[in-house]
Length: 266
Ligand SMILES: O=C(O)CCC(=O)C(=O)O
Image (cartoon, rainbow, N blue to C red; front, side, top):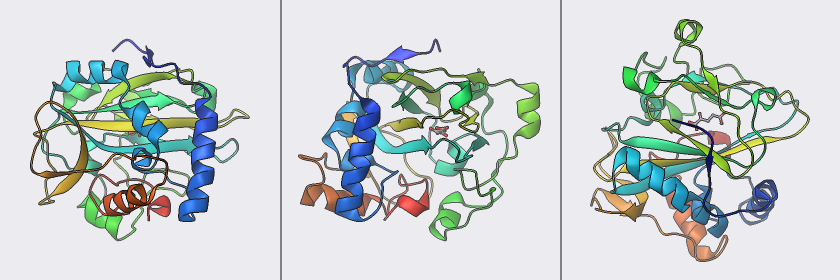
């Protein structure tokens, strides 16, 4: 894939949007939000449905699409956080590989600030290693974490020797640009050594015929094409943090798509 891609809408001050959203989240919910912010914010809902992203996602997974999840990856300067190299499906346990993430830059994202790095063509390799827990969802629900404290991920996929032989590409992005990565693409990111925040908004698109391997039902937002009764259709927010949006968000935090930093999930 030829990165970077440009959003079709010209969104201004993305970093400010992020911080203003988190200020509201603290007031309304008592904590910041990392998962599924598009259920609470009309801005992040609109961003997740940007035409330029959807056009590219359709080329990869077809026209029948749901947004299964979304997450912020904020790295504060001096915090020392990393995302260890991994593939997404060992975490997410989905039945198909028609799953793609758009990683939208809210700030400058480059090598110095700990940009996303992706191993070219690794999406063709299938799942390379299992995680160091048997069932990621069960372990997540129990609040287990086996990675080092400064790792934003919870479990180890032990891809160090793979990375030595397969060099990741640094995805340099400016605010308003995005990259795409497949559910099997090996990716991760290093420490933010800059003096500013590095923030990404990752939106997970799945084809309608994709399900969770173990859950009998799931919820997601229908975007286009065929629906699937397996998914309860999550409601888009009418206004920011309105009563229904908060209810929808709290419900969604109990589903399989709410996989991420447990500290910030309700
Ligand atoms: O933002 C990062 O550094 C990692 C993002 C990531 O792992 C993902 O979007 O799946």
